Image 1 (cartoon, rainbow, N blue to C red):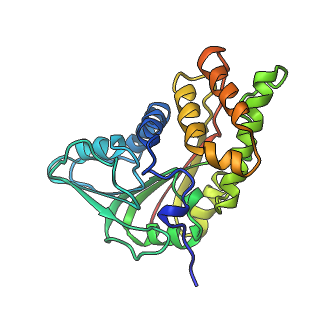
Image 2: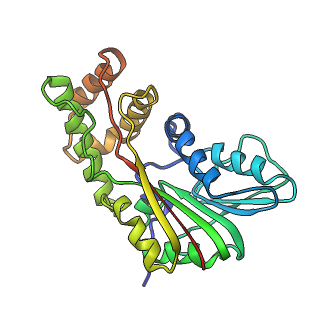
Length: 267
């Protein structure tokens, strides 16, 4: 029986009060990288695009502007609360579970997912669904984190505040693993795309260090995970408060996991 992660099981639930700020920080951090790669796919006016797990509205809106009124963007997610700021006539929103549901359509020119598949229990089925939805010659861009490739919150580990940041990052990774996330998934994407029958496969990585958006991303993520971190014994409430104060006032050079971007074309 196929098992997929439900909305309630997702560690960073978009229904949480911190979700909007967290999604904004992710957009600030990763959108320039994502837009560069989407531009490289050749997406243009008239294309039909499937955006999976958009979270916030930025990627959906970018695609909608690029494909124009003759094109279409289908944005699907388990929770679409933050997916668009203002409706566009060429954007359709649909609740869809990429790890469980059949493809929401066929003959897409472009399929894109960012920070989605790492959280899906049946990633193999999800990837097959994405490939099947492409037209011949269609392009897929999949972007996912690889926390095992770079597991630290602070690359320096000499001072107490740096060590505390890394302790909390280790707790975050443990919580992700408990929910079924594959912490080494990003590095497998080129191979998985080739095994799925894609051609012209390539990949690269983006590794933010000390970027302005790293601090708000850390603050909103830790606040969202506070209860789970404490209840699972990964940190005390006092440690969390000290870490958040360190992030806000002491200039920690925070890092994120590398974002692996992989692309390919359906024959």
